[in-house]
Image 1 (cartoon, rainbow, N blue to C red):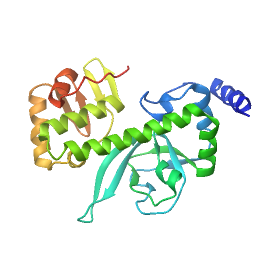
Image 2 (cartoon, rainbow, N blue to C red):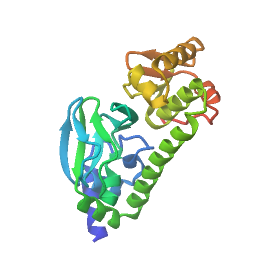
Image 3 (spheres, one colour):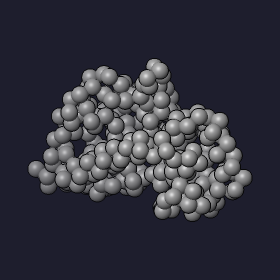
Image 4 (cartoon, rainbow, N blue to C red):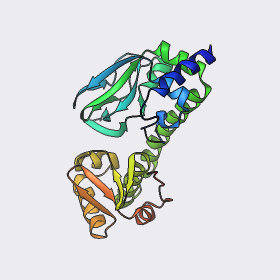
Length: 249
């Protein structure tokens, strides 16, 4: 059974002009070519526009979305009844897997921040795939663990760390996961407004604005309209108190 699936995936891979356009830190970037090519054949291809919701917090549903391209925001309701940005996801990532595993209501809302493409995969099809490919099951477990670690760090660190440290850590994480290295530094491809960045950091917008201005003056970063370039990775890591991120070109 597995050999047949592998042969089919290999044949499809030969037709792909680019074998792995996804970040190496993403689910699709981690998988071997045969496993990855089988996974992207599953489900129904769906196109999204900016502001369109893939998943809604509190709703029932067990399907998952395998993100192929675009940027997506993960939101959750706060105590004062507003939606706060928890994380960002991009092509190569998967969303909705927790409800697939435990059949509980969705814990967050996922919204397309622009044009994007995803595969909607039923829980039955997805779980059958994971049972067939051990490397995929392990990669999904690592993805879930990474999300839980991120959430735990936010709770533990953001209440006690200085805002500049929090900003540096968030920018460092975004650069590590979604950054593209170039001649002048690492470009963070996530299109975030300053209010959205403040939500990720867990600080007020004016505080984050002051930190960004200071980092610009120190030539650690450059900023533009929804664009951030990390010019000095080592200095950003020093401020964050972490090891410099390694980003593949």
